[in-house]
Amino acid sequence: MKYLMTLLSTILLLSAGEGPTIKIGLLKYSGGGDWYANPTSLVNLSAFCNKYLGTNMDPEYAVVDAGSVELFNYPLVHMTGHGNVVFSDADADNLRTYLMAGGFLHIDDNYGMDPFVRVAMKKVFPELSFTELPFNHPIYQQKYKFDSGVPKIHKHDEKPAQGFGLIYEGRLVCFYSYESDLGDGWEDQEVHKDPEEIRAKALKMGANIVQYVFGN
Image (cartoon, rainbow, N blue to C red):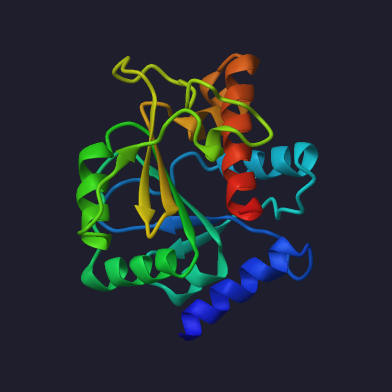
């Protein structure tokens, strides 16, 4: 109950435009996967949202362990990486409670984490499975319209980009961008040397995620 009240109080303050500056959490997990990938991505996304959405986001994100009570301080938590993901029983229980209490998790496959993150999230919600979101889902219809769903940013296996969700009691609690690599598009331009139009698509989709979380 303490965790639930902490999260709900934070969401209400942020929604009202009062209290602390919005800060995104970056999820730290076990298993050896590089949870720390794309170090400039959330910094650039926050700056973009401040400029084009009028948010008041802290440019510095917070690293938060999956099993930490600190998770409940961040209504939006981002998760990325290329490899293995392992949640302990305590991690899974904590993340489940966080999401049930109103938190939101964005998972961005940076290439190679898909088979691991699906198993890990099944530990969090054994009763749920990822389902592909329809293109008319509100997350694609915020300030920026993505009528074909999540944009393709990097080639990877050259499969089409897909956006999956976990829906708990009618609420989208986790958005999983697969074969897209939004985070690479959010990074500084010199890191991947993406064309500006590609980076713009990635940042606009990221802004939609932020607006969806804090506007609903």
